[in-house]
Length: 96
Image (cartoon, rainbow, N blue to C red; front, side, top):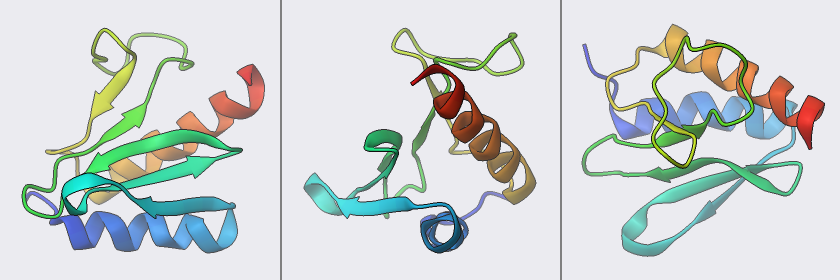
């Protein structure tokens, strides 16, 4: 079952408290999150549940990225999102 935006937001908010993930609103009610002053989650949409996690620093080809290196998480489940976010956060620490 596809997670709603509020479910994804709740998951990210846990990291907001524990891992210094900073939440801020952008246009049309969408939400971005920064980690180490860089956007790691972008365009989380409250209407569609769509959003993206930065995958440009991840090694391997486990995830499909767009041409800018972002991974669409619209159809990811809670475990998949958590796993991807943790990998993305580690990649930020290694490459930035």
